[in-house]
Length: 133
Image 1: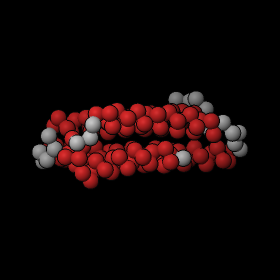
Image 2: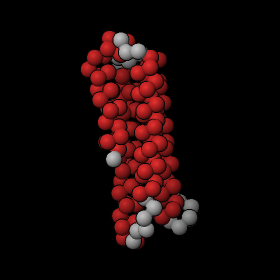
Image 3: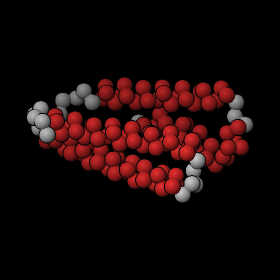
Image 4: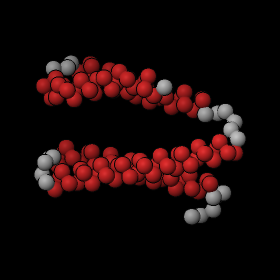
């Protein structure tokens, strides 16, 4: 379902990646606004449809397996964004990427790591029955 909603946005991003800044500067402003609006609308639609589909009652074993998979995914996400953060810091130290471009990317990396960490801690708190860990 996510691929269906985000496929046009991925095509747009690939177009920008292939054509670089020259192709991006030729695009009118309304295309940028339309793609941003489409991205936000897709996020809302996927969130709404995903929540609607998750309301089905599940058995204990299936719920536990989903919890294990979610925990594994969060740990992989933390590891991935730590590696991306370290790569970004290395590019800054080597002066390959200017600081004004690197800082927003590093900020996003740190925020994603914090959100993944918070979700992981919240999941552990729930699985422990509300006890402090």
